[in-house]
Amino acid sequence: MIHIINITPASLSGEHNQDSEPNIAVNPANTNEIVATAFTRDPTGGPNAPIYLSTDGGATWSLRSIIPGDGDFGTGDITTAFAGAGGTLYAGILNGTTFAMQILRTPDATSTATLSVLVQRSSEDQPWVVATTADTGSGPTDRVFVGNEDGNQPSGRTATVDASQDAATAPAPAGFAPIQLEHRSTVTIPGLGRGKDGPPIRTAVHSSGVVYSAFQRWASGTFPALFTDIVVVRDDSWGASATPFSALVDSGDGVVGQRVSTNQFIRFNDQMGQERLGSDLAIAVDPTDPATVFVAWASRVGGASGTDWTLHVSRSTDHGQSWSADVRTITNAKNPALAITADRHVGFAYQQFTGTTWDTKLEITTDAWSTASTPLVLHSADASTPTPTFLPYIGDYIRMISLGNDLYGVFCGNNTPNMANFPSGITYQRAADWNTHTLLSTDGVTPVATSIDPFFFHWSELRLPIIPRGIIPPGIRGRGPILPPITRGPIARQPPQPPQPPEPPAPIQPTPETRAPTELDL
Image 1 (spheres, rainbow, N blue to C red):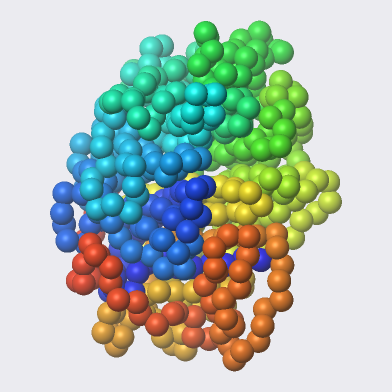
Image 2 (image 1 turned 180 degrees about the vertical axis):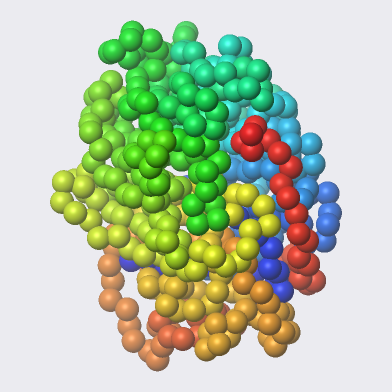
């Protein structure tokens, strides 16, 4: 059972900016409470960037401008995570005005108070937050990991994780300290005068204390044509071992960090479907078995003369020491997201370019694709509309997480209100005319240009019959909160909801812009 909801609130129906590169966090202690993020500016031009907040399981959303540093894109990057208990929300951002990396927290995501800053460093890229709560015997403590590509690390070995063993209660910096993950040399980048790893550093945590991190080593080549290795490291004690993340030693060269695949060709910042390429990566560990872990990445299989951009998925069943050949490949796709449910359903979400459309798909497998899985198409829309105002266009990543037997995710794409674009159904908050495929402003009359919006989805394995009642059946209870009405007819939006403070009544006005350069834009 799948539900898909456009996140833009009804009160921002006049908005038509490029709200790309999404992220999501769901509170395990209260799955009604969900935070989503994107490159969204504060509608009032205030000093803080917004998050999207739902307190009803994703049925409706409002804005909370509580992230420090609202710039031309809101924040430079932003990811979020809730720990397992207590409701503390953590965020990793590139501040929208300074582009310094900041690690943030708030004890209450529904508050209008600005998140507090725990860590701040420059020369960073793409912070990625993962959090959990561990029972230490003397009470629960939040264990938080922030993967980041840290230009401050020596010898061009920039793949890094900042780890905290008591993130909720300790004073700043709350125990966060950078751990260098890369143990091999990296190719020198002329524009930097040093080497570096790829921007994505992804982490997966098991409740036993086993922590995996995956990164993309830039091994050789001449920028932007690079040969990369996909590397996984592991720590068996919450990232707090005497030599953290050193449990995996490569069976080939004897160096810390097992290479999943080597000599994968990429051309960094190449383009496909108006989007840039070069940094796709995801990792997930089986919550019932810390020895089973999946990794997904992308490369150009055809090498320097190829035209493809192929996603690969590999599996390890021995704690990351050895890896299978590809269990799944998808041509001309990016933005992999992996998550595994408590009953061992592996969810794999991605965005595939068909030549004319971007298609966002979700696959579910229980046997690592030994038998074929049929993708659920969440979204399929024209890839040439709208024209990009900056890169990334739809985003360098999407995100999906598991809680129990449910999957929660978020993606961005063309927001044209056409039911043909949503084969699995859709609910809009923002005003739209579904007969003419036109977005409308808050007055319900004025046309609004097509843009890029974030979309939320929730998948549950529980399948209950939908009770017919016209074209909009009543809500159905799944394994989470009461779900919103499922839309099956031509009118897909819900009636406009009254704005919730501090959500402003005025629509966002478009401002053509070009993103400030970071190491990602070399």
